[in-house]
Image 1 (cartoon, rainbow, N blue to C red):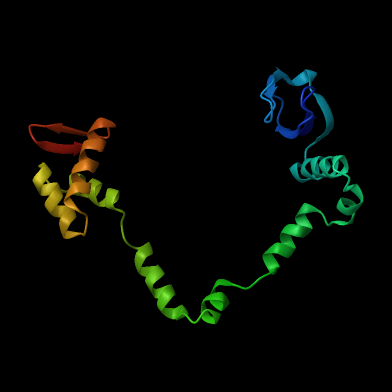
Image 2 (image 1 turned 90 degrees about the horizontal axis):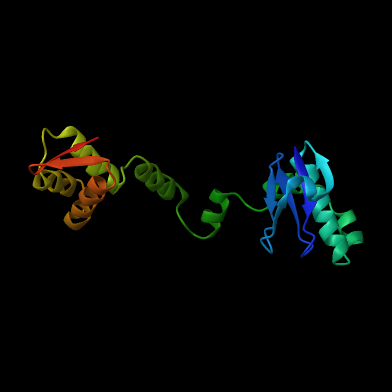
Length: 170
């Protein structure tokens, strides 16, 4: 359930999802019991609540008639998806090689992040020392300084342990 509610102090309008005990005004921060807030509309449809709030705000600013001429949020969203150019057209018209870009994107989506490589090193190596983890990660393009910091962070966060110079994931 969605409710369009207002603040008695600053006249802000916002949408509340559900039926909480209290609500806080996003503008002035005043907290009141939700049952004491003025509810302008209560509906099961979030889009309907958005339409009502938008209409009220437009009317307050003197644009009620202009707002009435607009399409609903659903219709505007559908038109937005259909407008403009797609990515391939934009890239091609910009003078770029679309196939090369798509190929490069496919290559990068298959690569691991630096953090994943460090974790993989700790997980796959047998009783790895810091030097072994650094060597493993360096072979995969991760800088030594990053690997050392990542190991320290993993231990501090409790995601890995270090005992006698050997690391393991928890």
